[in-house]
Every structure is written in structure tokens, then in C-alpha cells.
Length: 427
Image (cartoon, rainbow, N blue to C red; front, side, top):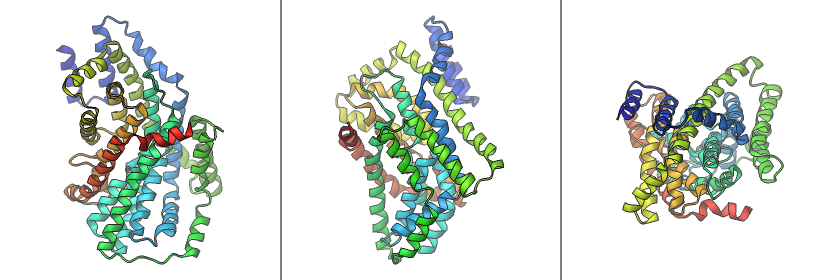
């Protein structure tokens, strides 16, 4: 009771998340009469995780891209390629947001960076205010399932620490996220085209000259995803090495060749990106200690036995899991949710016969929707601030997109082959 009261008091006082997690681990180990030095050992254990290097490196590369004019070039290129389609500009927005979020790892940054370009352009093209707000707010988190998503890497790191019977390789997670991510994109594209035809949004003629110009402008950005994905799956370099290549590439291109970022800006970009990484890593470090306690105390096993008493069906468990993760996504950012909830829920899911890679895709697909689920989804507040709109207007604007993506989540959840087919083909 004293331990529970202490944790509640920390939450009320607004203590940082890592303090709450570390305190719960300290209380747990102390109650079991285990030497508390085990926590320091568990925290140090993340040093022995080579793939962890990928998180700060990819984050830094993403921040550099975010500070450059890469987002503007990306919009021009996708517009030249897809702008002639019905709903072409909406399709451009979806692809650009998904690609940008995958590279930067931050959905809020996508709304702020690309929203400034896409929102006025869509308004000028004749799209409705509510549709524009809903599309940009909801597509801000679309890139979580595409490589080299930081969220996919972090899930892989956590799953690898749990000694599961089925291996969870980062490159397999990258493959697993491709088809579910494309399904989400495809459903949103279909909806956008349907709306644009119904609202009689005019289309533009395909312009080969415009495409040629956009290709010339983007000549330095286009090879990056090909180098990263191709290098990983050809076995030429590991995920952490791919992250180092990404950093070197964006620094050479944006600082030395295009000169869009000055040398004096780099310390600020490094600091901002590493503040984010530091927050993620310290939460991850203490959560490993907390996870170790939960395994020692057999908490996941007891939870599984309790749930099994009330839920026999794997399908019912998956439905309740989706509801739980949607609610979780409203309250926690994806990184905090991963390190706190995955150690508890992953063993239960495995007990129901769900592959840990499939579970990771389900988890992140739900987190994508949670980012803009009313009433407290984080992207709703970012978009409200960015576009100077009432939060209630954002609620109404995002509902159609939330319903469409929830249908996608149900397909991803109950059709495991969508996530696992490319992995099986690769192996």
C-alpha cells in the first residue's frame, strides 16, 4: 500500500516518467529482498545492444533533413508524379507525410514542416477546410510502419531483451511494416479520390517538364531510401551501419553540396535531436530494470493466466487489445508506450499464438491512430496550434480518417499474412 501510494504521489506531483518506472522497479526488487545493484546492471545492459546506435543516428539524420528544404522538394516531386490524378494533391500530401515521418521519426514535425506547404496549397486547389485539416493531421503519423522508423527499431530492441522463442530482427520488422503501411495509405488514397470526385476538385495535366525539373531538384534525396533499404536487405551493412551512412549522406548533401544548413546550425540540431534521444534512452534503460523485475515476479504469466480465465478466443483478445492500444495511444507518445506496455503485453500475445513481429505491427498501427484520436491525441493539439483552429474542429475533421484507419487496423490484426508474407519470402 505504501509503495502504491508513493507511485501515485509521484504521478500527481508530475515526476518524469523514467522516475516513476525506476521507482516501481526499486520498490519491486526491495520487496523481493534482491540487491538493488541489479537495477544499475540492467541499465548498463543497453550498452551491449549494438542496434541501439541506430536510434540517435537516424534521429539526427531526420532532424537535419527537417531543417533543410527537403520537405519542399519532396512535395514538388510527388506533385509532379501524382498531381494529375483525381484527388492528386491529397494523394501527394499522404505520400509526402508518410515518407517524411518515416525519415524524421516525428509525426509532430511532419505536421509543422509539411503543413505549412500542403495546407494552403490544398485550400487553393478547392479542397474543403475540414478535409484539409483531417488529412494533414491524420497523415502526420503514417510513416511509423515504414523503414527506417525509429519506433520499429525501438520495438525490436525491447523485444530482443525479452528472450522470446521467436526471434525479432530489426530488418524483419522493416519488411513486416511495408504492406500494412501501404494498406493504410491505399485506403486513405481511395477515400481522398472519392471525396475529390464528389466535390469536383479540378485535376491538372501531367507536365513532363515539371517532373523533369522536380527530379533534378530532388536528385540528392532520392538515392537515400534506396541506399538504406537496399544496403540492409542485400546484407551489405547492418541497421546501425545504415544509420551511420544516413548521417554521413545527409551531412554531405545538405551541408557541403546544397549548403542549406550552415556549420553553425549543426550544434543546435545535434542538441535538439539528442534531447529527444536522451529522453527515449533513459526511459528504455529504467524500463529494462522494471521488465526484469516483472519477469522475476512472473507478472506477465499471472496476467496471461488471469486473462485466459476470462477470454478463451484469440480473436476476442485481439479486439480487446486494439481497443486498449487506441486508448493508450491517446495518452502516451509512441516511445513511452513501447517501453512501458510492450514488456507486459508481448508475452501475453505470444501466449495466444501471436508472432511477436505481427504483434509489433499491430501495436504501432494502433499508435498511429491514437496520435489523433479525440479527445487528447497529441497530433490534434499540434495541428490546432499550427493552423490556429479550435480543437473541436480538429475532432470533427479527423473522424472519417480515424474510421478508415481503424478498418485498416482490423485487417492488419486479423490477417497476419499481410505482415509476415514478405518476411517468409525473404527467408
